[in-house]
Amino acid sequence: MKLPEDPTTPALLQTLHMIADPTGFLDTCAQRYGDAFTLRVLGSSSPPVVFFSDPEAIQAIYTQLADQFELGKVTHVFRPLTGDRSLIMQDGTSHQNQRQLLMPALYGEGLFRCGELICTITRQKAATWSVGSVISVQEQMLEISLEIILRVVFGMQLGQRYTRLKALLHTLLEWVNSPLYSVQFFLPPLQQDLGRWSPWGRFVHLRQQIDELLYAEIAERRQWIADQPTERSEPPQPSEPTDILSLLIAARDSEGQPLSDQELRDQLMTLLLLGHETTASGLTWAFYWIYQNPAILLCLRSELEHLPTDIDPVQLSQQPYLTAVCKEALRVYPIALISQPRKVKQTIKLKGYEFEPGTVLVPCIYLAHRRAQTYPEADQFRPERFLNCKLSPYEYFPFGGGNRSCIGMALALFEMKLILATLMRYYQFTPTRPIQPIHRPARRGITFVPPGNLQLRVTAKQTLPAAEQDSHVLTSDF
Image (tube, rainbow, N blue to C red; front, top):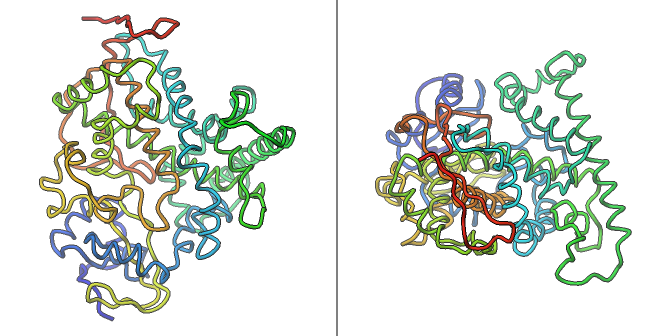
């Protein structure tokens, strides 16, 4: 079997190197071997894992060769969290059908209905920040993101169930991001329920508590929808829910069948897992770059400050420089280093190489986003890259690509832009200490964030009159 070049170090050492310093390891391999190289990073008996950053190879993996892979089997590590019916666990026709069923709730009109609520939640969560207070950007972005998932995705209203579920989900997400629990997802022999005081037993008990609350919410929402009049006006009236859970409950497949309770539960947990930490990390990077470069901060403020107070959220999200800042933040240090790995089902040829069944092919987002041929001075943060040129989905793909791209990518980018724009319009900040250049990002669960604890001090806070006129009241300590 002809494979791209590979290091001569043992598979176990490669695996440990990838765990300890993934970006450094990938950078070294790319510098030594180029756009394609073979690693053994799935343990001591790892199959060949081939990384690609060349757009032509990535396009072939996403398009011409798409039917030659098994994907659900590669995501088995997420099964304890997302369940068997999650979209990311499906292959072939089952994946295609389920994706078509979910898409309307996460794109277009179904998505845009969430805009005002995202802005409102952001303002509400930030309302407690006073002039002079110091905020931890990562912590605050996680808090805002979780609130949005509970209210925009799950459609929950404030109350006892909401409060209880939020606390449980917060605990779950912290556990998932800790080394003790994350290693258990990769090593099934450690997944032993030895009682509530054992690590896996605690996880199982926590998951059961979350499931009880989710199934209760699903049942209540189904009943509410069933009680509504058959004929509905368009657009929805204010009393009608437009959250993603309600849209999924109302969805029907080609045979007129709805999603089961388990399918709904598994999709909600998938959106939580893939949409909470990732959005918060992307926003943290955006703040890092904005406040490291005063010229970028000035350009962004200039674009936002001239907008009308009551601008529609969709129009707000379409501001060119805002969009460029968010896209560039997702390019330099993407929240996921790789697209979903593909396991070869039958022998295929690609770029002069031959891959036998069992070989794993990986479109590498991190390296594709740093190719000098595509991005001159790729380590520099330059939003203007996205103002003056159009990149292909095989050169820029922060949410993966092909028919396995993240189904929540439109929501994540929409949410990211609205949160950033809302906070930048209503607050002014200054770093508590000079922001140093990045030498190595820090791992947090499945994402990567700026090292250290990025903290900003609130230096000005804008309040609007009740009628939300164009006049502003600005309080400041300077």
